[in-house]
Structures are given as C-alpha cells and as structure tokens.
Image (cartoon, rainbow, N blue to C red; front, side, top):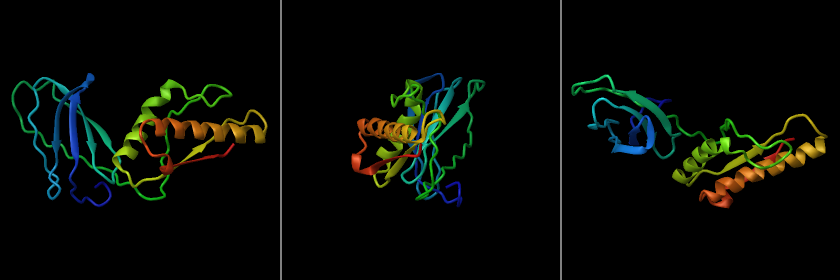
Length: 171
C-alpha cells in the first residue's frame, strides 16, 4: 500500500515487454508479507501488471535482457488505494470534432477504467463530459452530456453494469 506501507496480496502478471500478448507468468504475492517469487527467462525484458482489489492497477517494467546468469532481484511494488469520492482523471479521451463519437486513440484508457471497474464490483463512477469553448453554452452543454453518455456506453459494452455508471455534462 503506497499510503500506509502495509503489505497486501496482489496478482502480478509478467509479460514480454515487446509483446503484451506474450504472457510469461502470473504470480500472487503473500497477503501477509507481500512477498512473491517467480522464475522468468533470462535475457528478456518484462512488463509487470499488478492488481489487487481496492487498489489502482500498476504497470511497471523490469529490464533483465542484460542478465546472462541467474540472479535474485528484489522488486517492491506499491499500489495506490482507491479512495472514495476522489476524482480519477482519464487522460487522452478524444472525440471527433463537434461529435460524441469516441476516437480509437481513447480506447486503451477506457479499457483500463473498464477493467478497474470489472475487478472492483463495489465501485460506482460518474463520467463528467466537457467541451472546448467554441459554440454556444447551451450547445456545448448538450454536446458534453452526449460525450459523457458515449463513454458510459463504451464502458457498459465492456461488461460493467449500467447502474454503476453515471454521466454528467459540464459544457
């Protein structure tokens, strides 16, 4: 736990750094000690994805391609707890101009929040939509509401229950 230093149990997935479809190993850290052990191939770099209920997932890297012999490596991973009513800012959510159509560049970020919600079924969120300052205030209000609703539909299509998703536009 990044806030308290408390040890937690977590899932840690090791994947090939160059190919995220190449899953190498999935290990679980001990919920009492936080310790985990894994044997991974030498001469390879890894992406680590760590998840625990009630915490934000974390991606990290472990560069081992320069290791030619077996070695024990200590890699501490600290997860940030999800705090009720604390805003989450979604980065890189883009729409076509004057539209509520989500651009594909936004999908990875929306997939991350969808996965977070699927892994933590007690979380409900409100999606707040915004627009640029072009156009009238009433028009921008409606557009921001439609954009927020588009994000809700996207997340719902990923399997998150509709009653956990709320939307609001702020012009």
